[in-house]
Length: 135
Ligand code: TYD
Image 1 (cartoon, helix red, strand yellow):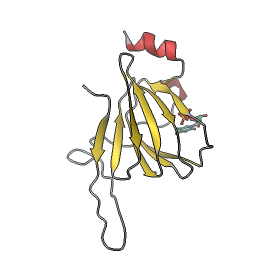
Image 2 (cartoon, rainbow, N blue to C red):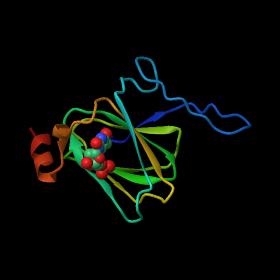
Image 3 (cartoon, protein in one colour):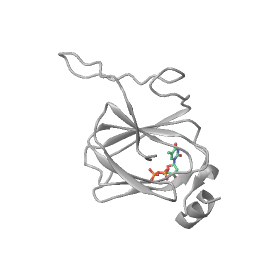
Image 4 (cartoon, rainbow, N blue to C red):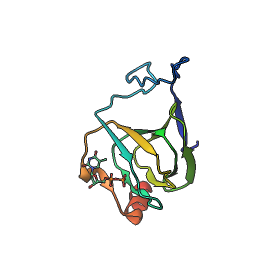
């Protein structure tokens, strides 16, 4: 099964412009509850981010402006996708290594997360990640 899983948000735009509503909960576009929202923007050119996995945290990443390239790796396969569409959210499950590259200057990457920030949930060392992912 592919690591790249998209959620498509209906576009509620009209002749004035575009609008996307992201609703959470059962039978909604995002099927889990969100405790935290953060966004990454003004990323310096040539900078890559991420390089970690989470033990127990699901996220949905939505590029609401510009674009960036997301690499996901579950310890067995590595896949990548461009995030460049405000109506598409990329689901990132727990125990998935993520890297973000090639941020455009105007990129605003919005991330919805199922848990509050907790540094102890991060795995920041790739060999540790491979070890834990294979258990
Ligand atoms: P980090 O998750 O390492 O960023 P990225 O994966 O995008 O490179 O976070 C960068 C810093 O910001 C780190 O010191 C932790 C802090 N941070 C918070 O305090 N709260 C948060 O919700 C997030 C995502 C990061």
